[in-house]
Amino acid sequence: MNVAIAAIGQMASSGGVLSRLAVEFHVEWPLLAAQVLNFTVVALLLQRFAVGPLLAMLEARQNVVREGLVAAEEAGRRLADSEKSCAGKMREAALEAEKIIGDARLGAEALADEQRKSAAAQLSALRAKEMERIEEGRAVALRDARKVLRHDVVSLAAKILLEGVDEADAAKFSAKAVRAIGAMEA
Image 1 (cartoon, one colour):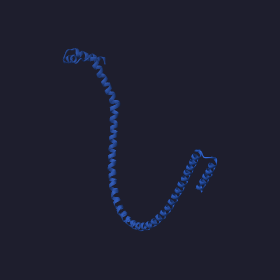
Image 2: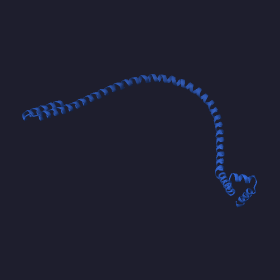
Image 3: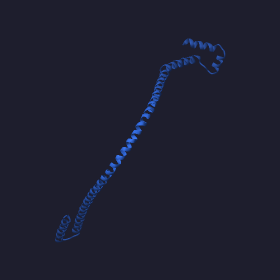
Image 4: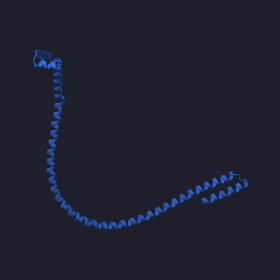
């Protein structure tokens, strides 16, 4: 390396065109030689460890693609053969389908009658269930209304008693309220 740097430095000092260019562009020959050497080392390392493996990988990928194209062509041929076979089977299936459709129409009519009867029975059962639910809801609403009414009667009685009713009237009023509440619960 030192020999190469010395040779370049000697050429630069000889005074030719190269020397003038070196002076004009401020070239330092030892530094330039070191950079050329570094570039060469890096280029060789990249070739060995990056570009070479990358090219090998691309070649392998191209081989895979080629094999895929060959397989696709073969699959195309097999598809054409199976389409021919399929056309014959489709004709047979169409004849069989016509027969099945005729049988299905007869069965469908019988099934439709049966389903109409079943739907009518389900509708009747559903109506009965809904009537039960409505009746239960009415009973719950009536129970809730009685609770609210009892609470209002007790509140009213408490207000009247607090406003200054004597003991005899309060006892009569309490007895009437208890009877009224008992009548509501029945």
